Amino acid sequence: MSQPARVLEAADVRRLIRHIRCARYPLRNHVIVLLSFKAGLRACEIAGLDWSMVLRPDGKMDRHITVARQIAKMGSGRMIPLHPELRSALERLHRDQGSPRRGAIIRSERGSHMRAQSIVNWFASVYAELGFCGCSSHSGRRTFITKSARLLGRTGGSLRDVQELAGHRSLSTTERYIAGDRVIQHKLVQLV
Image 1: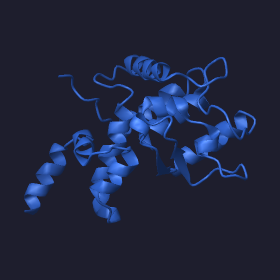
Image 2: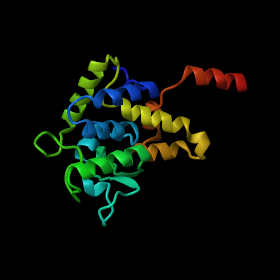
Image 3: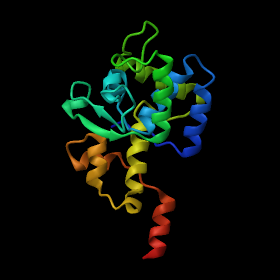
Image 4: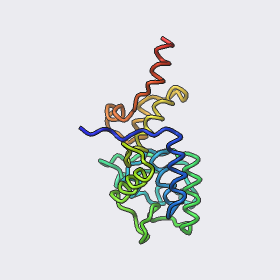
């Protein structure tokens, strides 16, 4: 059985973002990273995302991403609130692309939707350049789900909320994504 994708610490994510800003297509690449780490999207969802899924009818940025069933794994479409950093990056990319109402958000060099495998390969290449072992295109998703679960106590939410954000049909699937933390476990035991 293979190991699950590594969950990144905040410092690693900052290092990743600094690294991609120096490569080709820095704005597009920044949005790819944020869609993974701030919205928990899968590679197929990042590749299939269309402007119509993040824009209101008046062409302004919406408050959430509507992950359409046709791009979601097993048809698990859902709505994900837009993180402020992701919203800002999407607005910049939208202006950079000429403010379209429809069409690929993450474009290939030829201007069409990138393929899911291209997103997977892109993440693998970037993580290799950084020397991040155990990381894959799923690392952002696992990081998003783990961080969301850890913040539940502050929000009054439940694991069901994380499950819905992740688009999982089963709560047990969501639980498998959540990484434990030895430091937090130590603190918990001290409080018992």
